Image 1 (cartoon, rainbow, N blue to C red):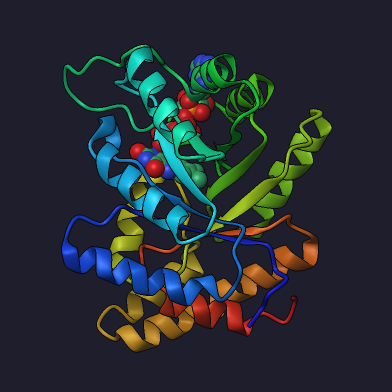
Image 2: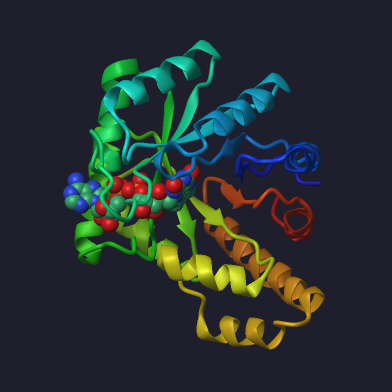
Length: 278
Ligand code: FAD
């Protein structure tokens, strides 16, 4: 067990009674690693607001720091204001602050176009109450017009008042190192925590990666494809590859690791237990 490693774990809000029970079990297993916080995602356009809130409040009632994700696209200022008040009333102190994916079709974008506007609004409404996390993209956001513009947009969020950032997942550690170098050269000094995606299933990972712009390197893709019908071998390879990535990042000196858990603990426990660096 690694008690001193700074870690955080991300969940999605479960829909069913079984999903809720499974997440409680997952949380109990991951709590042994003494995480800084558990975060809970938010569905596009507010589709999970109530479930995100319920999950966050349950985690907090168990005595852990819980951080809801909050996304602004298709939301009004009034809706965000109400959500912030609900979180403040329950003593929530950390938010993962996002734009969210732009919905397709004729849906209004609402009062906010980009995450920097949400960060500014939260600061304006609630001062320093919340620790604000924002998203960072070492391999660049899929809508980025250029690498330089994406970096400038990230800086905008930091200048609006973000305290720290969590990255999109990546399997190329060099993309993260270069991103941090550029941030430092540009005067960005907030902690930027790598987001770590364990490998559970190739089809699902390939689909996620296509949508969010995270590259699966060719050597890894071909090896994972070869194990498409052999889940135990695929997961064993995934644990090796992701453990090595975490070791590389920790040796370099990352501030913490944030795991995308998909509400499962087993694979992540193997990865953390593999780590030499405490
Ligand atoms: P932004 O920072 O607003 O950036 C979006 C795009 O717009 C980028 O291409 C950027 O370069 C550009 N841009 C930004 N500001 C400007 C500007 N002022 N002018 C012009 N262009 C600009 N999604 C969910 O729906 N729910 C979640 O819970 C969730 N959690 C996430 C957690 C993490 C750690 C990460 C990395 C992503 C998460 N996402 C989640 C996905 C995220 O919502 C999408 O990636 C979304 O498309 C962008 O959100 P953002 O906050 O990064 O947007």
